[in-house]
Length: 121
Image 1 (cartoon, rainbow, N blue to C red):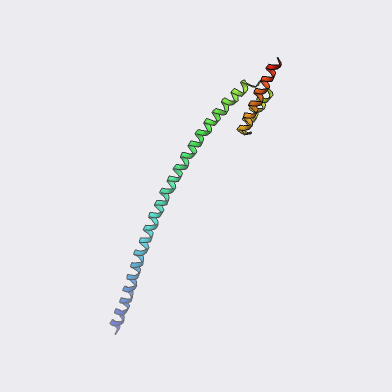
Image 2 (cartoon, rainbow, N blue to C red):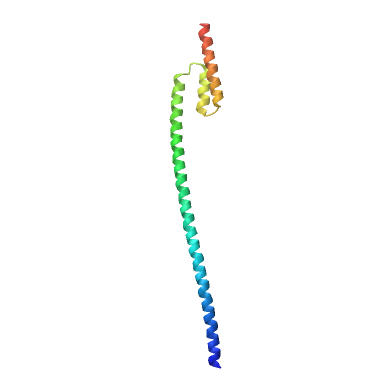
């Protein structure tokens, strides 16, 4: 009777051990899936970081080009500031304000003013 009780307990322990082993295999599978997903997410994150770096580089290059154009415009404006209209247009351009239509209007006003001055002479 003791042996029968011992065998019964042993079978119960073996059954629980089998269940624990099955649970361990299941969890190991889930862990592998999570690691694969994490690896994919890290890869995706690196790709996003690379795209961001390329975009930042392109923006920096454009900023450099814009700065060069602004300096050229300022130099040109400095050489052609004969009328008040030109000076205000150059100031507006340097400040980055005013629309292109406004600048065009300023240039037209300046041209008309120069024509009137020539006619007056």
